[in-house]
Length: 241
Image (tube, rainbow, N blue to C red):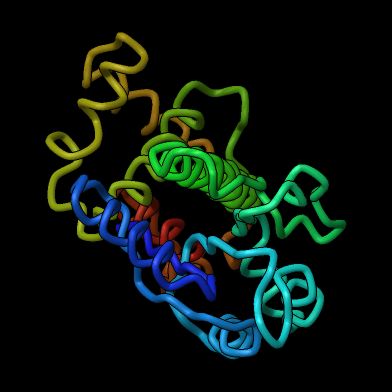
């Protein structure tokens, strides 16, 4: 569920937008409405689960652009590319992305509400793609730390298996043959047996080339033991997320 906060002193407009979102029954939820800049700053500087902020340029106490400048350092990091500026005047055409990259886009209230929903969906898609990229890089860093051979197909398959598991929030991994390998087999047009053999080959290379002390510390082993694929995926997954 995507949580959207509306910051607008025009309650009629804010509630109309909230009703519109609720009626179309999608994956977007208006989690809060605030009517002045100070209230918004207090909320954003606290730890709340907000994905997108629709921010009116003309707000009481602090206007929309002042709000962006007054956020805490933590909030500025958390809400990068999370603001869609809205305005009932032509000033929206003059808004440029700020240096901190907080603003994703600027829209006029004269636009149809469906345009705003579309823009929210584009923003969420942008965020998801960015998160996937960051997850992938963390996975590759862990694999590199363990000494996997990056040229092996199995190394790539393993990285994909970990990424797939994280994205689908399958933390238990009861059955790789059922939960993960079919996805890889379909993606690479290989048999499940082929996928498993390549991953096992990559794991074996890692085991023989990784420093034994590093291996024991990484997997919390007391003895020199070769971890199986399920253990490797789960261990790396918990270090990444």
